Amino acid sequence: MSNYSYNLDRHDVVFAKLYDVNVSYKNLNAVCNAIRYLTVGDAMKVLDGVIAIEMPILYKRYSKKIGARSELGGRKGRYPEKAAKEVKKVLANAVANAGNKGLDGESMFIVHASSNKTVIVRRNPSRGSLAWGRGMYGRSSINHSDIEYAKIEIGIADMNDKLSGNMRYFIKKNNPSARAASKKGADAKKQNAKPAKSAAKSDDAGAVKKEAKPAKSVAKSDDDAAAKKEAPKHDAEGKLEK
Image 1 (cartoon, one colour):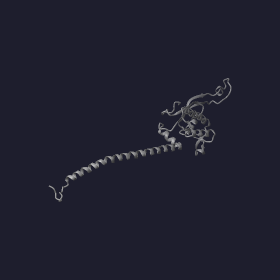
Image 2 (cartoon, helix red, strand yellow; image 1 turned 180 degrees about the horizontal axis):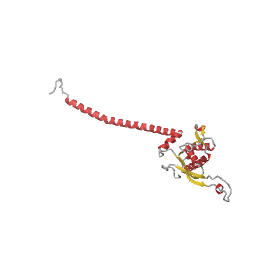
Image 3 (cartoon, one colour; image 1 turned 120 degrees about the vertical axis):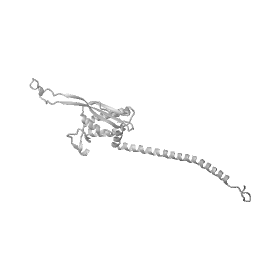
Image 4 (cartoon, one colour; image 1 turned 60 degrees about the vertical axis):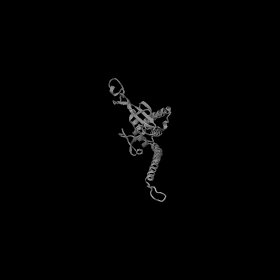
């Protein structure tokens, strides 16, 4: 399950990873869902709020026996502090990697955030009930529990056309500033395109008029010459000449 990752073009995306984290991957999944498609600054605020137990995280999956929170409008949530601390470390590493590439990591968007199980370590019960009556000592539970290690992967990128349509849609939906910037860019393109069209139309009209004028003058001269030839000639006394 550790092979799940970002499957699109990685050229313009800056990644950071952390393997074998001793944190519940279910809590990590909820934290990654909460910060995905946010700016790095907004995601840091969300993580700091969770660590300070001020802002709960919405649990869309793995929400059995989880209480509802008034901050989330009655939906289920909790404060996964340990998971938020680990995700914050990975996000800080991604920002540092962007800085090494000459990019402004604080203004970039989180386009990829995921968590998956990597290794499951089986823990057997200590010597106790299984060895009771065999000359050993101690008593413990006969149940065993496993340790599930997880992987965290975060990718940040600027808003560009190389991102998928779903990514651009959710970035605009979750960030009013990005939505306003896209509208300004569209309006600027429209304004730049209108004068060019009008100028092209005026040039075409002028060319048509220039080409049409000589044709009219040539037609008039031909009509005048034909009229002169057809007109009857009179002598000085007003009689028609033969």
